[in-house]
Length: 146
Image (cartoon, rainbow, N blue to C red; front, side):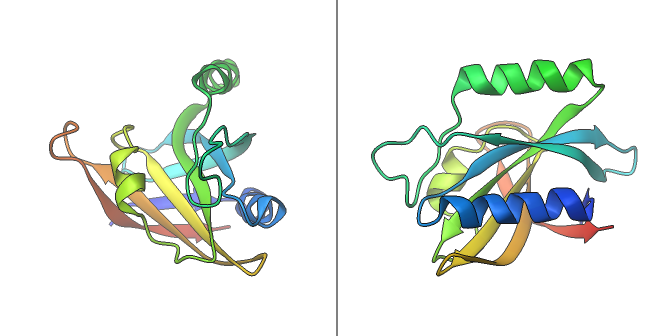
C-alpha cells in the first residue's frame, strides 16, 4: 500500500476547507514530491474554487486555468502536483463513480474528507493506479500525519 505524508498544518488545512465550504464540496491541489519508494510527501496545499454550478453539494470541478497556474507556481518552488483533495458533505470519505470517472492523474493521490453536519470527520486517500483511462482504478492509500 502506498503512503501519503502530510504535515499537521496541511492535513488540518484541507479538513478546515471542507468545513468552511459545507454544505458544498471543497476542492484543491496537493503539491510536494514523489519519493523513490512510492511515498508522496505533501509540502503545500492550494485551495481551488469549485466551479460546478449544477451540483456543488456533491460534485466538484477545478478550473483548468487555475490548475495550470498552481502547477506553474509549484514548479517554481520545486514542487510537483502529487494529488487532489475534496470533501463529501454528509457522505462517506469513499470515492464515488463520478470521482473515479473524473480522476485522470495516474500515480496521484485523491483525498476525500467526509464532512458531517459541518464538521470534518474521516479523511481517506486513494491512489489512481493503472496505465491509462481503460484500466485506471482507485486503491486505498495510507495517510501519515507528522
